[in-house]
Length: 150
Image (cartoon, rainbow, N blue to C red; front, side, top):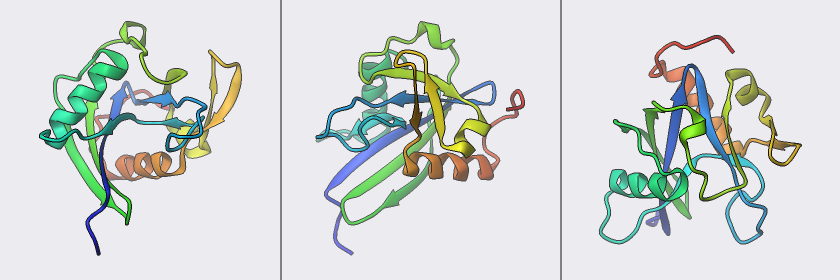
């Protein structure tokens, strides 16, 4: 297999049994437009994956968790994805949304259903399929501390 063209780093951030997601912009030139997905993005030249994720989180929500741990890597012919996980230690009201249309905490039930209502758009939007699969895999891993029931 040839080397993937793009390397991206993504954040699985959890708080009290729920997961922080971004409603991506409705622009056709981005990957997964208009759906719920992870915060994160492309790794810049000279960055390692953890450094790139910290930079992306500061740019997108002005917050970086105290600890980020590599969960898994996944690659196809175009993209190599690095999934990190960490606890969101502040309420969502303290986050500054600088990229995307909305942010919200997803319950496990909403992850399984693959959709969530956006308060800002007053619409139900889908959870991106790769994001949903990564969250289900993470839930099956047992790595997240127990939180409130969904």
